[in-house]
Image 1 (cartoon, rainbow, N blue to C red):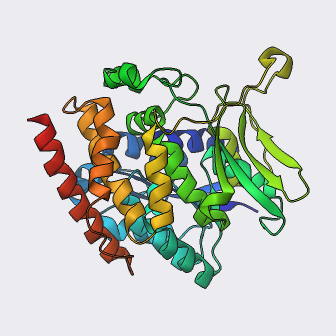
Image 2: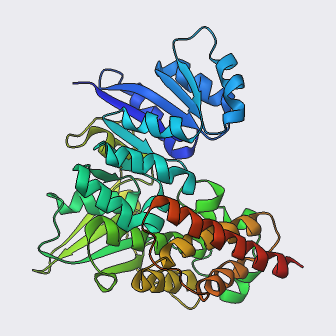
Length: 385
């Protein structure tokens, strides 16, 4: 049976990897919608290539340009937030790869409609985990984790239940600065921070890997996805990025999922779930790899880990404020307005401000997010001055 899919964020790295897999198996998938933030030409090319029924550009001002780019095709050009949400409701499976809080409402729309969501948008669960999981339970919607670490845990759980689980173990590459001192990291440039040793990713997530904030955000995600408290979720540095995460059971067994450093592996798992699909992805050669190393992370050199765990344990709006402050600080670093060490310091200062309490709706969450971003920009401006 053909699976109808919508790819939210089709022009990004996860969207591109998804398209590689979908276009290699046209008999299995029917692309009903593709979306992008602002890249009209690339979105139109994707829509034509896949035969998508609709293409949605997030910026309403770009709809005329999209309509022109799609002229002569059967694809319907649409724009704006409402159109993004509508596209998310009309598929069997949504690959949610929109970066940032722009992905919150479309993901929530899909979950409320009972649609299965392949979630690659960290912000959805970090900022709105309670709201998202509640909506999924009400509508009996399934969330399939696309992030390699959470997908690895999902695979290791088998039946998806944590009844006999002792702890979850998230693995981290350690990023490009894994062996450096705090003083050495402090003078690193954006170009050095985005040069990840194992993965090809966008600039923002690459910086998050360098600070290890990405692992802190994944800690919060894991809590919501699998329902275990902070003290039963560990982080282990594994520089080879071969073991993508582990599950330790009550009897002492540890199951680990291994695979190449290629996002198409977890994406393929989500696309085909509950089945499997063939891929042309290069296989692991264990004799060539020869060894696997593991070490404990250093929260002194990488304070983002400490901040994220504290935000998870504090609850309320702390995770949402952590995410918002980090996004603004990382953007300022990439613009060379603040230094590398200022990212975590800025987030910590913002988290120390008063907590407005847990958001009760996406709208309230977005208000908290906007206020936090404004506060962070003020602090960044003072630092930059």
